[in-house]
Image (cartoon, rainbow, N blue to C red; front, side, top):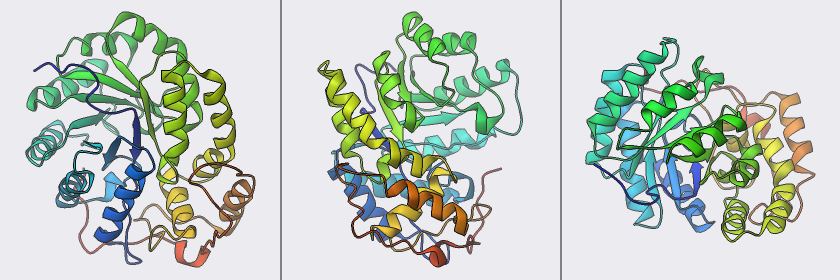
Length: 325
């Protein structure tokens, strides 16, 4: 099946999965947070990705996130399901089920831990892409998976009719330019600090963690780039820099984003599931120091920021363990 245009959106949020203090998914908070990010300017939401703690979600939770996302978005934003599995058969079943629930697209991460060869990566992506009619984003993040999707492999994958895009967290801008020259693939920045540089060389959009806190500046940046207004995009990029540093530098993005959202009163708990834990005292202090430098960022008012280091401490063991292998 072929897909015309961009079926994913441009400002995509790598959504955190709000949880209660005991580590269960807080479904009312999920709905509220989804609505918040769409209202702030997101036109796409990636659920069950790295930031959504896919590694410790159960399959039923992953599928319910797709279902809830479709209900909350009501056509206002695309719902992309991420994560998958490092077992090809398991990934196929998850994506098939997500398609039945109305997902608008899928994001397939390079198989992790197994360290497959490029032939194995190629086969994994092709078989998953064959299994549904949904448009596919390849997720290239060797820092987490242990293996990159090499340039030659990307070129071969680009020939698949369902594979339309790459989320790049590799940061090799020369390779991105090369792929953009050689294929019709869309690129999405997977590194919050590099959103504007990616867009400047031809990327389509972003899939961002910091956008959980405020998607509005990213909407401004993308819209400015679309109309060729680099000055406006650069000014917003500079304003965002300390917030991006706070969210992405000191602890995993999921942990920092939840800590910040809770301090803003936007989610009921900053809890993450083990083996993730909340920031230690010194880490929390570093995050708060960065936030003190945030000024004039639309949607990020820290004047009433009330962090709770005790609430964030430790991690949770949920009642039912996840099924990711």
